Length: 482
Image 1 (cartoon, rainbow, N blue to C red):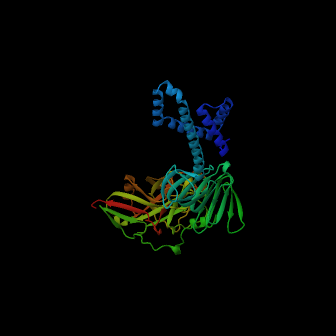
Image 2: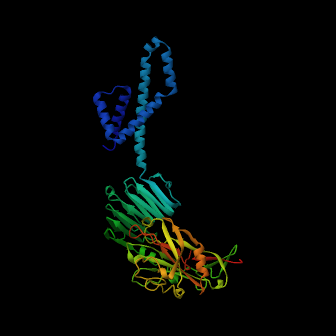
Image 3: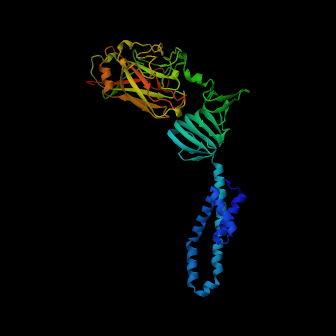
């Protein structure tokens, strides 16, 4: 047996008491030994009883009384053996009662918990009703993850990774509700039937690995990585079975791919002048002069990403049509004739909402400078996989630029699960690249060197000058005399 019911627990506790008092028969001793060997729960209960009995035996008052009895001589010893026996009997009885209490307390305690927070990566919580520290055991309640990743292991064996920003309600060991955000679930065969509920859909697992994203307005996507899931759309009788590699999208993916139409761009102020940052530094953004920012994606469709509020970057060897590279241009004509002493290239990280962060480890990005100045005059609204600076659509490493037309300026890192913050590139290579400019316009190409571990991995994103809530790409320059 794997668990003890109340009758079995009482039987084990009774044998424990008889063992402590020396009243256990050979047959009962054999039965107890077999039970303890085969049942971990019985062993734990027996150990608790022994521990409590030892504590009672070491009670100072009882030890003192025993010493007094021994000091009274043969008469006292002969007259009071029953007192010590009664003491042992009381101790054993108390141990039995304590054991019963411990057993049912452990069972009740276990019933309260349905999951454990096993890992939190770059996590920041906000408004959760449940404990969020690693190792915390939790019952019913809500997790609100503002940043990073959090891994939960349900008592059923299911492992769920929350990706910020997400709100997840824990219902029981086989059910949860994703109010908004993204999660990736790994369901072992023993937990088939595990269900993820969203405002507009119910996703039922059949032993697999899958991802779900949900928006506040009811839009959702489901992507099966391994195995089989069933998706029940709540607004009708539509039920879909999805196998590995298949997905269903109810408007959410389309919204993410086209995050902001040009006519709905926010009226956010972006610096259209060179700003004095103090201590001799001046700041240019892509909103200044001939500045521009966009990206390209490796497929046959002609995309116009020039109006997007962020540019996307991705490397994938698993889906050739989904590689992406970022392009950023700065107008530095006003620095002509000045000696550049130092410089920084700065990007603001944005949540891209495309792909699963769980499937992409800590990522390394490379920044290249375009040395072929004949290609600096690119149009952010006409950039494509077929027509982009220092780009050869047929080269094997599709995520990188043409080496003969570029120079590597350096690298930066983004930890897994991070979707906010800034990335800064600084060094002699950047300064040398700016000093060699002759046309007052410089182009940076941003590439991710880190591959995804499975299809539909995260696409990283960085704010552009069209962003309504973040700082566009910046170039900070310090010249001699400043």
